[in-house]
Every structure is written in C-alpha cells, then in structure tokens.
Amino acid sequence: MLNPTVLNPTVLEPGGRYRCGVLGHPVGHSLSPAMHRAAYAQIGLDWQYDAHDVQEAELAGFVSSCGPGWRGLSLTMPLKRAVLPLLDERSELVRRVGAANTVVFAGGLVRGDNTDVAGVTGALGAAGIHRVETAVLVGAGASADSVHVALAELGLRRLHLAVRDPRRAQPLATRASAAGVRVSVGALADLVSDAPDGVDLLASTVPGGTDIEVGDELLSRSRAVLDIAYDPWPSPLLTRARGHGAQVVDGIAMLAHQAAQQVRLMTEHDVPVDVLHAAAWSALESRR
Image 1 (tube, rainbow, N blue to C red):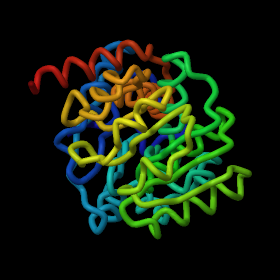
Image 2: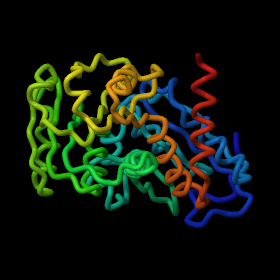
Image 3: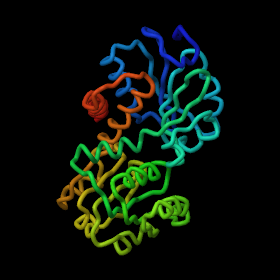
C-alpha cells in the first residue's frame, strides 16, 4: 500500500506517491499498465498503476473507495458511459461524446474527461490523414461516439453507421445529424451495398475477435482503414485492408496517443507518444 502525502490533491506534491489504474471487464488484455508504468519511469515518478476487473454494477463502489492517494482511472468497456452519473465535473469533450474514459481525483472531486478523441485524431494525423469527409463506422458503442467526434474535427460530412442491430445506432445517428453530418444507418450484413462509393475512412470500433463482415469490394474502395482493436493481433481486418492497398491505422497508435493525454491529465507531465507506443508493442509481443 502507498503512503499518500495528500488526499486527492488539487495540486500534486513533488515527490508524492499516487495510485492510478485501469478498470474494465474483461481487463486482462489491457496494455494501459505497460504504457503508464513506462510513462512514470520516463518522467521519474514513483507511482503505482494496476489493472482492476470491474463490472458496471461494481463501478460506483470502486470509485467511492478511491480515497487517499488515488489520482486517476482509465476506463475501458463497459464503463465509459456507466461512469457519467458518478462524476462531479465533466469536460466539454465528455459532454459532446457522452462517454468518459478518464477519471481524475482532485480536491475531493471526481472529474471526467475523454482522451479517446485525441487518440483517434493523433493516430490519423501521424499517418498523414488530416481530413475525412466520408466515413463508414462499424459499431455504435462508446468508442464509436469518440471516433465520430474525432472525425467531425477532421471535416466529416457524410457518415454511414453499420451495426448488427440498427436501432442501437439511432442515438449516435441523431447526434451526428445535429452536428450537420449526413447520416445513414444500416445492418452490418448489408454494409457493402449500403456504404458510399468513395470512403475516406472505414473505422471499426467493435471488440477484438468479433467477425466483421466487411467485403473485399468495400475494402478496395476505402482509402484508409482504422481498427481500434488490438487483441488478437495482428488485426484480421487490417491485414485484409493492407492487401487491398488501403492505408491502415492500428489500435496501438490510437491507444498510445490517447494514453499520452491521459498521462498529462493525471500527472501534469508530458511524455513522448513514442515511449508509450514502444511500451505497448513490447507488452503485446511478450504475449505472442
């Protein structure tokens, strides 16, 4: 156990020892511990970061138990929306996305933020993709909301949402339409026939290992493909997309860019994305 110097500090005390962690269910595949620990080593912080398997029904109890010494939480499935009622403060991005993947404890308050949007724009920007006008988005969960907001920042004009149950996509479709985006919704099984002819970006936000029914025809007319999943690796979708000549952007890049901002929010220090990217790859390779 750590011996904290202050209780949920508004201002971090130099040399203080704090706890952070990633919550989700399942969470054993998460690369966040490897990245955040590498960040602490780079910065020179004696902090602790661990993974905790937490289901939705357990989230409120876990957050309320984070007393002295706790500084931040990273949230993954299925907690990014479940945490909203537990927040004392929400960033503008959390309000726009409707999901938070980051919690910072400060001054006795539970503050929510979203770094997934920065993860998407950062990964795409690193790949030289700075404008996306037409996109196909597979999935309608919290991660899909973040991808949509990120693409809106890159000039999105037309969006096709593909999900197994089109009714699940209606809330996201409504938000996108309100932002001036032309939106269509269809079943995943009809993706090839429903998708626009020219696609700047095909983005998958479904969990790793899910069979995505993306036909070769759509891959061949997609300029770039983003798959946020990284387990299993390599992503079958990106492997196929690369074979069709599409530019590919992997989930590790997105993960590293979002983690860089998350580290900044929690520690008030910057760390190079390359450090986080290398740590994630090393951890992933060790599992093979």
